Length: 137
Image 1 (cartoon, rainbow, N blue to C red):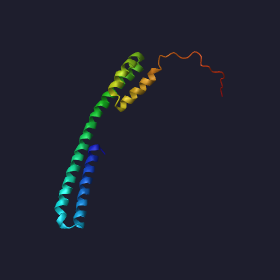
Image 2: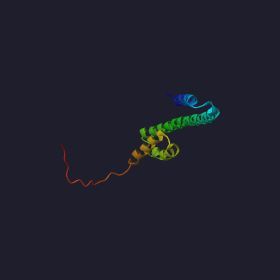
Image 3: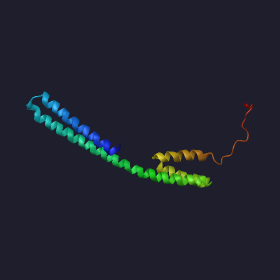
Image 4: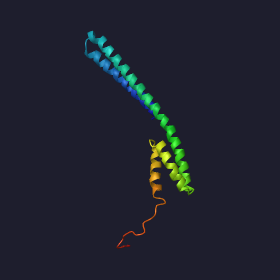
């Protein structure tokens, strides 16, 4: 179910709930308070409508992240291509810019992982491992 349908379903549930509460309140109380109850319910419905609009706005703002994720994915694929071509130094140089720009995305987490992996490439291996005994089974 998409977000917009989910928010629409939430709006319908909230409005139906408000109507049920209104009907229950009118059945249980006298007609003298009816105008106050209608006014209170009208305010509540207005408040709920504004909350729904805010949720719709935040769902629409989340769609901008999809484009950012696509851009991050394209950039990370270029960096992976550099790695597969053996251009490790160029890939290492491209990663800080990538991580700064796309750190907030899920694809950016992959870039951070790649940066950690490439950090060990090119380091000198220890010459003495200080291993006293070696067991082979």
